[in-house]
Every structure is written in C-alpha cells, then in structure tokens.
Image (cartoon, rainbow, N blue to C red; front, side, top):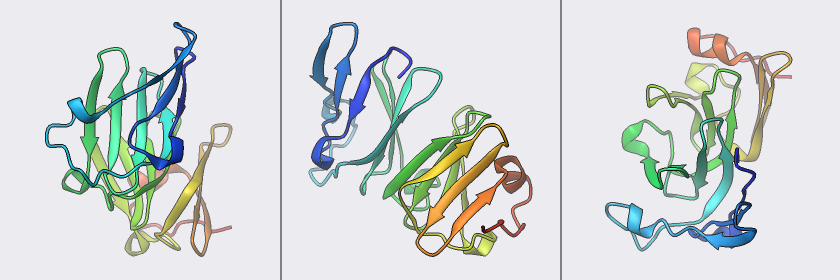
Length: 173
C-alpha cells in the first residue's frame, strides 16, 4: 500500500495478515468487530489490492468486496445489493481514472469509488464471456487498455469506451 505495508490473504481465511512497515512486524487485521452483522460463514480472500488514497481492497470468496480505510480503521462492504454481479470476487484492477474493475463468476463490474456506483457487464453487454478467474485483470496505462481473462476468452478494451458505450462489442484478441 502507499505506506509500504504488504498485505496477505493467508489460506483464504477472513483474517488478512499484513507487514506493518512502521512497526517492522506482522499484524493480523480482524474485520469481525467492523462488520455490522457478522456471518459465521464468511469466506476468505481471493485477491487484495490498494488504491492511491490509502484504502486496501479485498475480494472475497462469497462475501463481496471489502474497502478498508487503513488510516481511519473503517470498513465498507459492497455486495449484491450494491450492484455486484456476484459476491465471489476473483480479480481486482484499478484503471487510470481510479475506477476499480472487479472480475466475478457472473460478470465484470466497474466501481467508481468517488460515486460508489457499480456498473456490471456481461455477455448481454458484448463481453465474449462473463466468468472471470483469479488474477485475470491487467491495466496497461501506456495505452489505457484493460486486459481481462475469462473462462473462454481473453478480452482487451478501453475502459472509458466500455463505460460510455454499453452496447459495443468487446475486442477479443
């Protein structure tokens, strides 16, 4: 993250481990006290990434997307009710505009953290496939292109164009 901390999802548990650079030691972050209604069936993390504002994002296996504000020690959870295609999050990637692209088992989502708006794309919107695997997203900032690997296709597209033209055919290469 921006502070030099390293984050780990160990064994897909719901307790992330992180290397606290300022204290020069490992720590465990317990989300349980921060979750309004704790669910005993909370699954582990598939993917972890950080943004430029100091937030750490956790893609969960069945529990949605967690945004953790490390400075304020606050947790926000995004789930189906917030517009996610699935609570099984397999991939996370920020684009050049600071939007978070989310690969799930049921589509590709784009979250604008500034507005908390989630847009979901599926085959119906022109994607060649809508089942995304772990670590299947890559953003090429030199060309403003997002690469996405799905179960039957690799897709390449300009994220701005996809958001502006929902009905376009996504370029599969």
